[in-house]
Image (cartoon, rainbow, N blue to C red; front, top):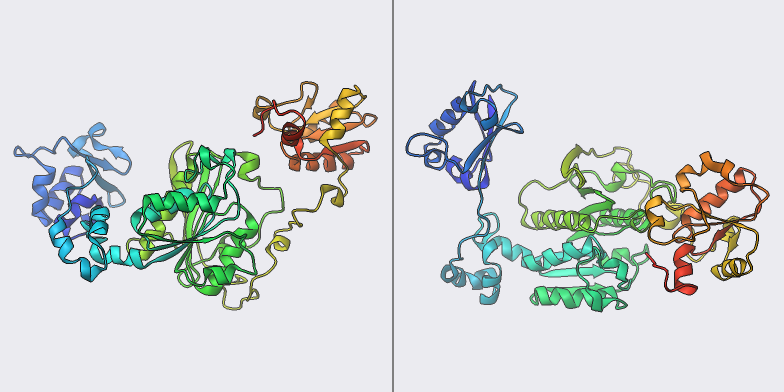
Length: 486
């Protein structure tokens, strides 16, 4: 039997079903069978002459049947038909009189009734659902690219208590994607600016700020009073920390991550499905996967993934729909395609498996192979040079070679005109462009990639090679303020 998928407005005419099975050999037979089983659908699909209405389209799988054989288009049991009517958007005015009468029972004020009216007239939410939202306690880890849209929509939806964890300050490079903040917020603590903005969105919400770095020492205390955790972090140590804390406390973890034009989203809840460690048992080696600060991210992408996180969070609160538990949603914004992969619970998972070996929070920096942030690169055997020393070499016209290992699109932002430009990934094939007899200074944006380049060159026999501490951005900060910093 073929499957006919029905849009939300038509489901009440089919007993609330999202899809219906029909026996048919053509599209027309499938529509006839649908009407026979659910007669009140007829006026919504066909006009008085029996023709399919002009604002209703029918798709066979992903093809519009108007460009196939219309009603004569053959179908098989493996095919799916989708009925796609035009949708105006919005909603009719709320019936505030009846809503006001129920306000006392639902614990909503008249102002909240007006504010949430578009929720209240939805059968999937209604007064009972809005009451659940008001009683919910959600913890957002991070107020950056993912946390900004997520927190805005959770506040607007009426989630009663929203915890916010962040210890950073607003930087002008945040403004391209972190929509909680404006130009006037640059230099302010993110939490102060975020709470101020969110209270403008919805003063009925109780915001609980935690201006501290999430760590193994404070994570269980911070998570303790919340029902759902939404992970908006951008680094592996905190991501594994959030996962493990959620598993140990039995809380769902609404996850997303982003890079350039791609993103992932899921809901990890060990009580009902896999956790993050079931998907990724171990983190990649340090530096193998570039961060957004190193590789960039399309500013719109965290908005898309953050809204998905907010949606999944609200579904969990309402206990409605099919959450992303056991599913990994992959988003490719360049092609604007969404794919879904099935996730399974790993029976050997070290924290949510039947025989866990991780029973308490650990040192996640060490687990991810990351040393203390204050440790200098020289401590790992990488020779360094400061921007002040580089300035002296340039002023003295010393005999040395400056190598830029950034990507070509970065050279257009800022560059030293005399530098030899070899992207890090192409360096092994271009060693013949350099001489072991030369003094060499290597730089990138901030020092991370150039440190790898120095290590690679030293392994290849170059001995007089040093890494520029802080990269070209440090030069722009302290030596040449006319040079753009990015």
